[in-house]
Length: 96
Image 1 (tube, one colour):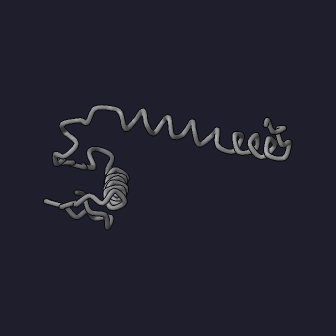
Image 2 (cartoon, rainbow, N blue to C red):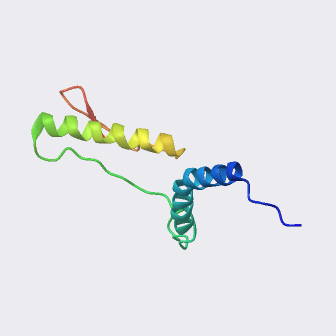
C-alpha cells in the first residue's frame, strides 16, 4: 500500500533544509581546517620582543598597548606567558 505524501510534512522538510543549509557550509569549512596537516611547530614556545623604537613617548605608549593586546590574546587562548625583562619609561608605560 502506497501512502500519499503529506503536504504539511513536505513543508516542514523544506523549512528544515533552509535552516540547516548555512550550518552545512560552516561545517564544511571547519572540516577543511581540521583536515590540514598539523604544523610541527605548533607545540613549540615563542619568544616575542616588543620595543618602542624611534618615536619618543608615543612609540613607548604604542609598544605598551601592543604588549597588552598580545597579553590579552594569550590569556584568551589559555597560553602561559612569562615576561623576562621590562624597562620603565617616563610616561608611565613600561616597555617589554
